[in-house]
Image (cartoon, rainbow, N blue to C red; front, side, top):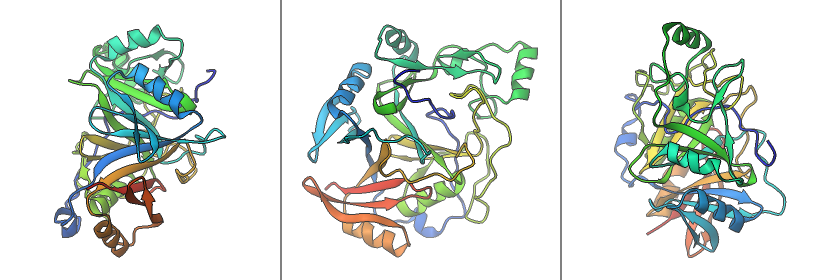
Length: 339
């Protein structure tokens, strides 16, 4: 696959399954500070202008912009992808907590047909079994079951025996982007927009509680019927069985899974796929995510009081201020003051 990043383990997008914890401290539900909004995903890019041009060609609702003196891609829901210019290509390995990012599209199959005509777009196959075979849209293979967006080896055998057919229609799909980015597009939705950052976590349920407690995130309800978790039982072993479709022939681990939202952008999580701990996002292709807050000083006081790790700041950022904190799996999170 010349020019593309070999995509790492699959997941899917919009998805994930998650839960609101009934055992969280009262402060989680009674925070006096308004919840942050998703502000940006920040990438390290060799040629920001070329990268932005690529995204505007593939997702026509986006536009080139600038924010705080930083080159930006703006989505119609006022979410941005910011680009820091680097002289040496930023690494995508070892694996960090940020896996890929994605868009809702109005008609995934129409997008796919257009992308097939473009030499600059390298579509990423979704492998359907460990023995080979692939599709370009998830709905062209066996549908998942029980809220999981894939089937195990034994479930695939059962689906074959029962003559289960692909659902067709909307689904999720992937392409390779500039600098080795992995981009998901999925549909069918009312409008095209940036809608998620797909991540890995060391402990997805514990991460969900962390984001609820410290950043007032909204937990996404469980798709698999999981009972609510608390700090006492949030550590759950990774599921033993890989599932397909997947971006890797060997399949993907999809349980446990969890997610939160900030406004209309989701952070969706699977447990890390490999055996090595996730490394810091700083300096990697996906450097950090950014959340906007109205009162930065109040958030600094709150987070310091809760023992959250601060990486930088406060510091000036354009005509405003920001701080950088660290999430539960070493993901960098920038809090930007937007009044």
